Length: 211
Image (cartoon, rainbow, N blue to C red):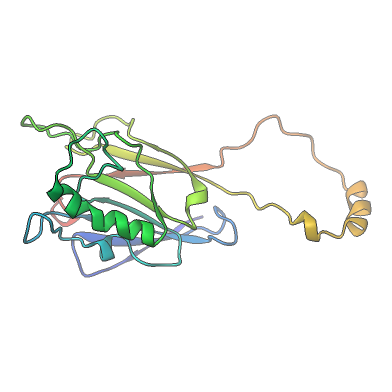
């Protein structure tokens, strides 16, 4: 059973959710955080309303960051031509991600933003980062769900339940052997249960407070 607790930031364009699910995780990761935001142009062409500090918090906890960053970077979209202004805008975010142990989950070159009108080419504006403690759970990142009707596609992230492995090095084997010999094991299962869990993220082109 999972408990979801919103953490209010006092901002309408940024929110954090605390997910507590001890039965879904190992003892080292009984909870994790999802940071979601919508960032737009700031006072200049190279500034955004959600700064790198807010977008990628420095935290020891397992954290998933997903947001409309409104930036362009070769790590997410190699085909696009990135001029100096675009690189100057996006570099602080990717630099902070590397500094604080975040990994980009996007499949490189897969677009997340398609303008419904106009001639602008598709782009990668919606980025997903995961912190180091949560990275071992990551399985897949896809955008194969049906259209949302908005200019941003729905993103599905698949995470896996990590099964705790006994520490055989420190196991008292002489003590354990007779216990195993007396134990009656159940029949071998021919299939494993679905231990993966999914997060579906849908973004629109407006902040949540305006939806």
